[in-house]
Figure 1 (tube, one colour):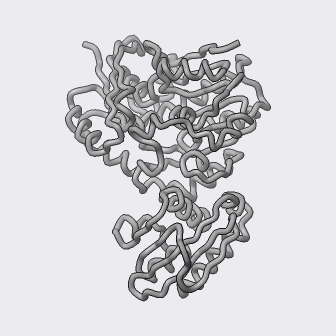
Figure 2 (spheres, each protein chain N blue to C red):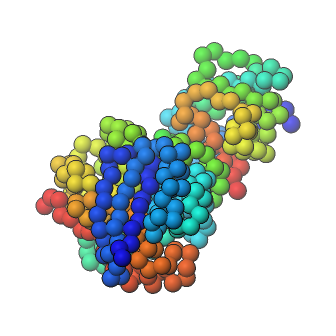
Figure 3 (cartoon, rainbow over the protein chains, first blue to last red):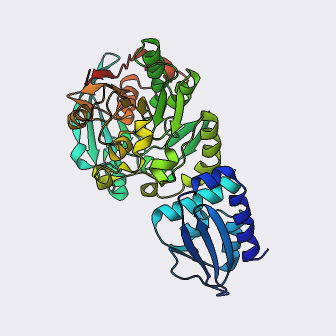
Length: 113
Length: 299
């Protein structure tokens, strides 16, 4: 699975889940993903809860997430929780604490248990 | 000889207090020592108190979140608890899951609150017993765990959904630094934030952690019933000014202050020699007649 596949899966899970859409209805953010090994940038956008993703850079991101591409892929496909690489220093997130926590919660609600 | 317990709290030092409680015929000296959110200082304080007092309470942090029999452990609290090798360390969860269920049932039985009313529990994963009791008695539950701890504007509307969320979130969330999950130290005295006022306005009863209530309550709480603890006299005055009708504390009031459940659990552990892990604990809690308080603030 590529990082783009993982992001598109994440987007589909969020957009098809009525509860997650309600949670994100007032959340509009631009998120840049920076794989620090492949340097193939990707983006994730929430527009009032409607998520989309793609390859490349995005202007004026609210949040930047940096990690090896494999770790980013595993996080967004639910194979790894963000806590482990974050605590190990492999995942660097720059942005508002509330946004970071929200992304953690979204991934856990989709793939938790 | 008097028993002595100390609550080491991640909360503000401004809320420090000491006093005496009589439980099961034993007088217990209780004191609360805040560390303004400094985890390392709290750990050092517990290490120093170990072996010199009869029990230690963990304040401003839960160790266990008990949701329908499943127990989740907050890792920062585990670290604090392990700093003591000889003295029992308790967090209040042993009381929340027993005493708080009883108190809600008694309020309902005595007609202070009524089935069908709406309840805002500002956080319920730390007080699942209370949330479940409200729901079982026919109250309309709104749990604000995601709203007030993570600013995700999503009310949880049933104990089943709360349990599902806990199952998915808590195994990971409990591994995060506690300061990301809950206001500690000076954050506890920040100005009111009215963003979520409508949840307070729509509720007849507001229940749960007082720091969340204080932080997010709107200018008027006219006619509301508030069920909480850890209130000081200044907090009571403020709730009165806002029009709160009844203030119910789930722990006893000493010199105008209702202590945290951790303090009372520590005192009860010291007085009885029995901890919440012991199967006899519910009997000990019942025998202690911990009534809390019911205070009329406005007509």
